[in-house]
Amino acid sequence: MKKALWVGVAIAIAAAGAWLYGSLVREEDDTSRPVRLLAIAEVQTLDLSFSRSGRLVTPVPEEGEPVAAGSLVARIEEPGLSQDVADLERQSAQVRARDETRREAVSQLKAELAQVESEERRTTRLVREGIAASADLETLQHRREAAQAGIRAREAEKQQLAAEEDTLKVRVEKVQRFEKEGTLASPVAGRVLTRYRRQGEFVEAGSPIVTLEVSSPYLRVEVPEERLSAFPQAARVRVWPQARPDASFFARVTSIKPRSEFATRRNWGLQSRDLKTFSVRLVPEGEGVVAGQTFVVEAGKR
Image (cartoon, rainbow, N blue to C red; front, side, top):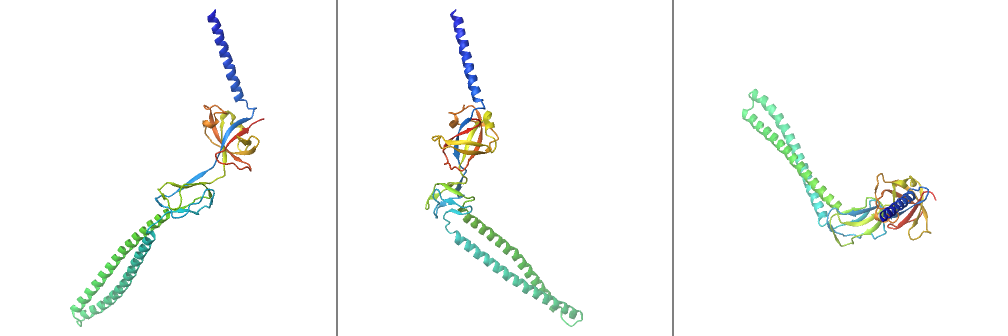
């Protein structure tokens, strides 16, 4: 008798649990009720850093200061780089002067060669007629060969000078690139969100100098798959700060992440943490929000 009683109690408890679970599921799947989820205000940020180490020699913008695209953010010390560039440019000028001297020498040798060849042809005729001695012709031939050898030597010197000038150009480019690495410019316009270093401090390569806020704050909310229909593209939803329900405003859906992920800790109070959710991005309409604030988002039928 007792055994049958306990079996009946177990069946009753199971039935009550099944009914309660079903009611919860029906409540969760009830699309007629508005959806309320938590959202957090976020911004797109960009960390700016140097590719080499050095000491800051210029002031770093303060938090909240605007930064224009391409403007100087900071510069690190560059000891001796300007002198190196001047010395390399001086060496390049010397190489160009030597090349100019070489070209003048080649022109003189070619003029001398033309004169020797003309005289050699005249002497050859005189030798054939028996008027001039063969020794004079041999002397002119030696002079012609010497002039041709001089021209070849000067032409070979041209290749050497060209190689020296190319080497100096490469060294100048390296120094200039090194100088450029010592200058930190902002690739985009934004506002300084965080400043990590001040003028005079030593910074390591890759260490952030400032973090820029490159976009206005937006809201990101994690929506369960069964409620995703309440957040269509470009839809307007009502939003209010979690601590101030009376300060509500509207936001518009701008993008939906194409794949789902497990719900994060901040939404455990409003939805089960074992649910898979889609990340939805909202842009406030005419209302400013602060990055890091938590908001309640309401969508769907009321």
